[in-house]
Image (cartoon, rainbow, N blue to C red; front, side):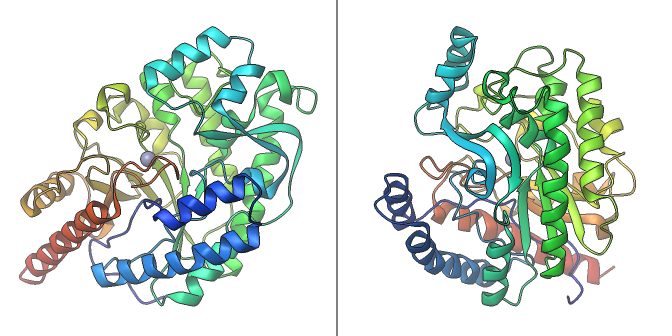
Length: 385
Ligand SMILES: [Zn+2]
């Protein structure tokens, strides 16, 4: 891999699915086409998206998660013992139905169109989660490729619904053991296939910090968190560190945000990263990919020994940030982080859910172009010393 420039530009993962993929997803769901046909439809769109990122000038590209229903649900297709359930189906199995329903209403989440992978048996990797997607991307671009994976804590909490999981795993900690093993197998295979950057998505960590004791995320129907958020954060740190233990030849990162499912910012969490810093510093990954364009994230925090993937545009707004705004955001980050450790990215994905993208492709591309333009200004500034 050729060396990256200063302020490398990349995305956080998802891209709005083009209409043909949304249609193909519906057909796949209804059993009218098979997975092979679905993949052949998505192939073309992924190649187009890779070209687009190259034209824009992204230094590290992704496949936009175009084959996924959402950023974590896709594992249901690849794992034994996991069944995809819509939030409406989950309502049928969880004991606290009224509570879960209230949660969905307050969070502005469509119960019928969002699905979650639920543990309904002993889990095992039937097929690689992302290795085939990596191979496909690498066959169609020369740029370094980032692969995004749901983190072990998110997966464990999302999949463990006691009402259906307990016959197979007494507690979510038992399920976590198998989740860690599966993600380690996946990471090993990704490394063998030449991945450049593996990002683990852990959006639930902010929930522990900002809404302790109140479950605010639809991603975890189980309401299974321990009451002590500090203990739960320790659990998350230990799972992530076990997944990446020994993988030193690849850039690993953890992405944390405060929710990216609605354009109504008032339904999303808010709070500074500060209370999370003692935990983030102990994550044995090279990079923390953090949202900062939204004012809900507060001021830039300092942490040692890691790269910062700095969120400089909000994926949920129609308005494209100005070049000046992006450069100012980088200048703020430079107060706490050295220039050679800052990557530039949006706050989160532009797609999130296949049936309910958070933005349109044209706006997403404009925002990425602004980030690249800012990086170019910063390069010129750096070369002048
Ligand atoms: Zn995010």
